[in-house]
Length: 469
Image 1 (cartoon, one colour):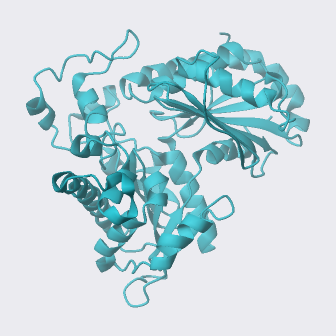
Image 2 (cartoon, one colour; image 1 turned 30 degrees about the vertical axis):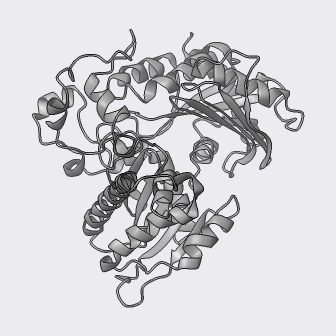
Image 3 (cartoon, one colour; image 1 turned 90 degrees about the horizontal axis):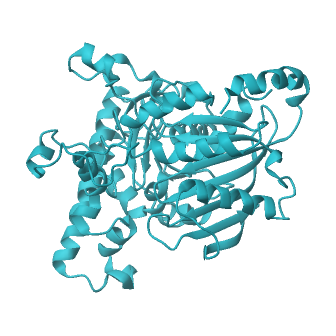
């Protein structure tokens, strides 16, 4: 692969004056361990991108793989099994998804790979990168080095980055968008671990924070909903999904994030332990320092990382990674799928639910103090944050002493389901508490935000003059 600057520089200089006025196609790519998702947008420089289509292949680690395809908001293919094409890697999935876009007559804007101007890649761990980065050979190799800090997260994305750099047209720019970049504003006294600082600096050991692409979207959407400038907004945001985190945002910038050196720290998740006593793992198993059988020549994963990242969380507590199953078990009348559970199994579900609520509330309390009580809103987002009215109600009830709530039952249980869609990014589920919930003009509202990391990556690309030449 040639250096991207050498390839593009003459072209950038000659096209710069007219390119900003042209609509361009931007792909946002999100590669997970078992799925790949791409969203295609039409965009003008400085304007919000418009989604054309979205496609996802799931089941890479649990065959058969399935394809989901949406065009202009309408489902075209819904979890259809892929039978006639090889799908064994993220790169295979990406190739199939791009072909689906090109072959779709309903998206005439994309008739060949040459029509794709930018590909934005979600990279979980960006190290010291503080903004999106045009991917050159040098950038790519720097990202490879970060695999040691995030072996379970970055490697899948880099598989697709490598494929794009090798196989996509030379006129297509690849851009890395980092989940950690939003958190570069975390103050030194918060991001620093109390260990030998020479060793920490040499090995890049500090808090980085993650889910930053989501938090950037949440901050912007919340500011718009509140009628405030981004730089005037203070919120406590919760990105709650199979991976979960909390974030204190002051003046539109990250003040603290529950995740740390890696996404493992902080809240528990579907298969992650969240924060535990660091010595626990050495009492858990005798081989924690050895490489996991899942390791490869290029990907080194210790047994400790495997245990805490893949064999913990509510999967370890309940046997399921589906939080919807857990909440349904607490209300058997709402679901036939949990009516067969024994009292002991229901108790396990209750324990997992209570642990999650307690850990979330602990971060809310901590961040409330960090923000000195000056909080515009508590914001729920992510798959669980958006879908679990029971979780939202439990959390708000527990932090009501801080001036949040009470929750409006109709808004929490009905309006969120019916109205939280592409036309409503934010729904309010608890109005300002006039007695306890207003300090220095900040009203302690409770909101639910439909976060959109794909859009946020495309938006960042469309607004950055360095890329849009």
